[in-house]
Image (tube, rainbow, N blue to C red; front, side, top):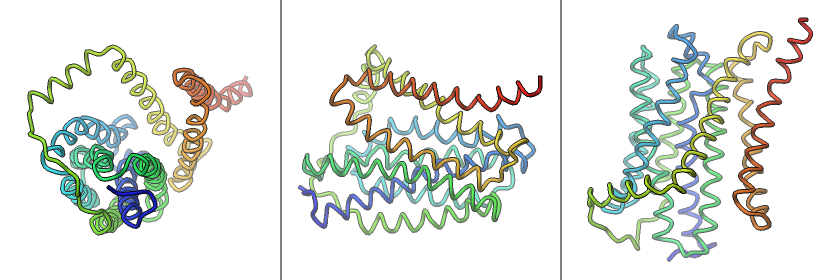
Length: 308
């Protein structure tokens, strides 16, 4: 088993951080481009946001299936194959000339994007000691944050500089570099034990999870929180590019640096959870979330007051 601090530990962990960066950079690269997509294809903001929503939808659905498949067929091979799929679809996105083609490719991309997030922790559980697993998972999750921020910054800066098509071209090159680094760095599985792929057993497990009321409550809380969070950021891109702000894609992309506060908040909430119950911490976080959302309306209220 892989121990904390060993060279193999750092190879595997860095590989997964790079892979995580690639995944979430591709998920979120379109977010600062939404107003540009709406203008280029002469569609509404709601239609343009579909290019982001469809990816997260197919990603979320696909997560349910990669885990059981990897239990039967192995971890690294599936992760590498899905990353190849991501790189190819990102390159194809740089060539599309219609919104329908862009939407179809983003849906397909979401299917590939689910591969690594669904399998990465299972790989760590197979190969790492319990102590090494805890450290590696924390570092791996940091790659999610960096990918989310990096993808939006790439979308904002490259989009303003070179346009929508070139942004996907640049992203495909970055994805290829990440893919090669991941393939070279990630150690081969040494402790993986294949399990039979039983579709009936998988479906029964899913059914039991959906019948568990406590789990359903958790699903809805997490799902709606993510729904509100993501859609606020998508909506605000259109607000900031319109009057009176008139910000360009580059500056809209900088907005997503605020994600770093989420990284800090995660660390603080983990420490607070040692002193207070986890539900209370989640309630506190939700209240802060609501307060922050209300603060964004302050400028609108101030302008309305001046109008009168």
